[in-house]
Image 1: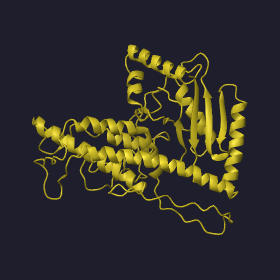
Image 2: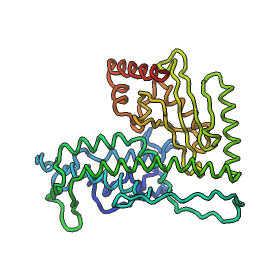
Image 3: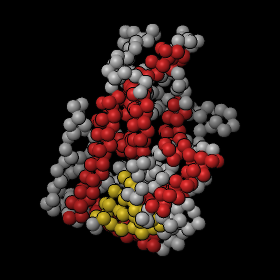
Length: 376
């Protein structure tokens, strides 16, 4: 197994087993060595493993009670200090690893102001007149944005739950093992964190709308990107028209090939039978570097679809739009998927879906009600 991993993060010590916190911010440098550890059966490295599986494995090292991992405090029974240590770690994880990272990606300033998106040029010109400017290498920028949309509800629930356990504007408690340059100072301000999360969510939707506007301009300019996407749309929509296994109509929104409107008809003899769902997929002009943003405009109670309508799906080919459509259908139709913690995007629905037999029946009832409401 390729075991050489170097973690490079900021100075905040979120967990004593792993200095710094990286899963949400991806401030990580992995150095995979060429040396191979034979390992036991089932432990060898395989092509099925990747960066995300490494992160999940490292995350498992983190204790729900990090206080006990501090040298000399392994057997501490100070429950109050343990709780206060967890409280400030939770606050700072949300503030730094989630919020600050996304604010940086979206040009949101500390005072809450947001930089405007670049003004679009409507004049037609030769797209080869000016050289393309290479953007800085940020391989996880789009992934962080998509995952934020998946887990937005979870972040809000975490903020609301944690806010009940602390007093607003109280200082963090300094731990007995902190000192010098290894001290986590600060104040609890969950009201501000909630506001910042909501602003990030709003700006992400504005960015999605901006993609559609960019697409309209490219269509007017008769750009090769727009022409190629139009051709791809024609091929994908025709493919689904001829597919007897899936009933899916795909159209363009205002003849814009960067915005696909999909109408999904529930498969007969399933919990989705009789449902009609409108799904919007907005495609960035920089696809596949920026992956499509998909939203169910018709509400549905489903464990793979967030309360804001964002589906959690995994295309087999990230650079193939047909694969995206197929993966969306697969995500909502699969009645017996393997458990995957990444898919917990709808807290209420997931709790019922993965719960007891009675809870699973309750899930199916709520899903059926949402299907029935889809045609009202």
